[in-house]
Structure formats: structure tokens, C-alpha cells
Amino acid sequence: MTIEIHVLGTSSARPAQGRSVSGSIVETQNGMFVVDCGEGFQNRLVNHRSAMKTHGGRRLKMSKVAAILLTHGHLDHTWGVLPWLQTMALDGRKDPLWVIGPTTSEVVDTLLGGEREPEVSPSDLVIQYDMWIDLGANSETLGYDLTWVLGDGTRWVNMNDGSEIELPQPMADTTISAHATQHTVPSVAWKVSTADRQGKFNRNATQDLPLEIISSLAAGNDCEYDGKLLKAADYRSSIRPGISVIISGDTAEQAIDTECDLLIHEATFLEAHSDIANEHLHSSASGAARTALECKAKHLALTHYSARLENHTASLAEARELHPSVVALSDGDRLQLLDANSLNHFIKSSEGWLQQD
Image (cartoon, rainbow, N blue to C red):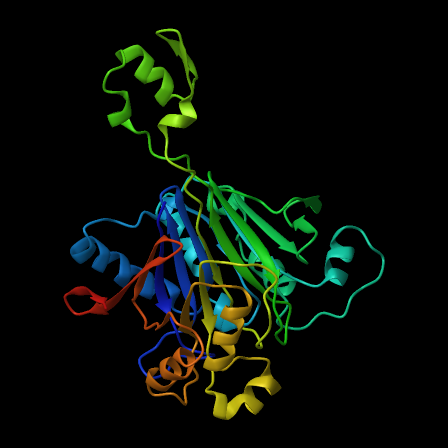
């Protein structure tokens, strides 16, 4: 199963140098997740979908988006949510949608009935959720089933009714998980993992068998034939492992507590400005590479560049000194993770996409 990432924004804090703020689509064969949804997300999405239809040979159907996954509450990652929810209502969406993001344990305690009123940062998602719901971002007004979820990584709260729930898993054969990161507000990295798949059926090994025996073996059933027990597992290759991608959001350099095949990590600064990165709890390109090594990522993709960086040439060079497989993303790029070892990087051009060697 392939995971494809559509990159709709690579700028830090504000649009700059021809780059827009954060927003990505993670696409699998069973559906899509949107990870972060900063200001102007809809405009970028319209342009990207048009290019996919014209040059990519297929349409990105928004009905296939199962959830919006927010890494944290800063507006360059969230301010496009509300208008896009409204647009989907105007487009006649009927499929359910989840919006899931992080908050503090103190906020979770309060939402679950605790008496103590927590101190809440103005950028905590609980404030934005309450505001958006008051402005009509609810199932009754929009006409489709919309569920708001907040959590501290361990406990998750359905904001629609105040109940504690497990982290939703809205897509078949695909798992999402949240992993704490270090920023100035509650923040997580989102991991999307596909399930293992059974090995390919070896039809060449069954050429001398009756059709009904072949069909039964292909369905996974052991069979008796000509006095012998034929085991279905002997006619398949080894299990094909699933693949995984992590999108970090904003974070200081740290060891993420899980492994992945592809890490998409912020690289706001260069190592020469690591003091500023540390002060604001952001990462350098070298820091992203060190994080990738810590979580055993086979591939690293850099994003979220400071406005002071005119391009990502220096960022790419810096990270490649530490990690063997690094790409630097631009707005409109696409990544295809084919398996744990194979990553294709397609760079947006005026005539579609060009595969980067």
C-alpha cells in the first residue's frame, strides 16, 4: 500500500518567499487525512486539485477525507479549518468527519467533569474549538456528522457530548497515533501507519492443481489433494510489512517516541541560529536530521522554513551531512512512500510534476 503526501504549505508562521503556511494531505488507498490547515488552505487545495486532475490524471475527492489532524493550536496551522468545513457543507458533504487535536491534561480533566478551572493558553485548541462550534461548526448546521476531539495523548474527549473515548481510527487498514512534541503550546506529531498485508499468491506453483483447489488456497484455506495436505501459507510470499509516515508539526529538536519510514519534520532555522530555535522551541535542519536518526526514519523530508530563508538549499545540505536520505519540500510537491525503502519526490512545475532524482 502506498502513502502519498500532498504538500500544500512549507512556510513558518506566515506566507513568505512564495511559500504558504502549513497544510498537508496524507493519502492512502482507503482515504485521506489532512494534517494542519493554516490560513488560505482552501485556495491552495483548489489549485492542487485542479493540477492533479489536469496533470496527475486523477481527482482528489474531499469526501474521502476522514479526519483533520491538528498538531497544535497556532493559527498558521489551524485558521483554515472553519471556512473549509463550511465549503464542504456547501458542496453537499454527507460523509462523517473528525477533527482531532492536542490539549493539556488539565483541560482534559476539566472537560471530563473536574472542578478545577485550568490555566489555558490563548492558542490552546479548546478555545478555538469552542469558538468554531459557536460559529456553526456542528453537525446540525453543516448537514454532515462532525465530531470534535481533544486529548492529551492518553485520554481523548468527544467535545460534542463530553464523553471520554479512544483515539478514533476512522480509516480501514490504517492507524493514526499522536506523539508528544515540545513547543510553546500543547503539540503532537501525527503518525499514519498502514496495516501489514499478506504475501502475494504464487499461481505458478499451482499450475498442476484443480481450479477449486487453487481458489481455496488463494482464500487462505489448507487443502487435501492427492493424499497430501497443501498449506495455503506455502503458496504465498512473506507478509508485506505496512509503512508509516510522521508529520511533526512545530517542535524543538527531540527524540520522538516511535519509529517510522518517513519523517516530515520542521526545519525552521539553520544550525547557525540554533539559539533562536531553542528559544522558540523550533528545530534546525540539523536538528530534524538528528531526530530522524533517533526515530530510525529511513527518509527525512524538511518543511516549515523561516521567512529569513530565501530557499531551502542550505537546509538540505545541512541535513544531508547527518542523514543519508533527505529531501527538501516546496509548496505543491508530492511524496510517494512505496515501501520502507522507496520514496519518490515529485516537484511541482507549471506543467505538472517532475520526479526528483
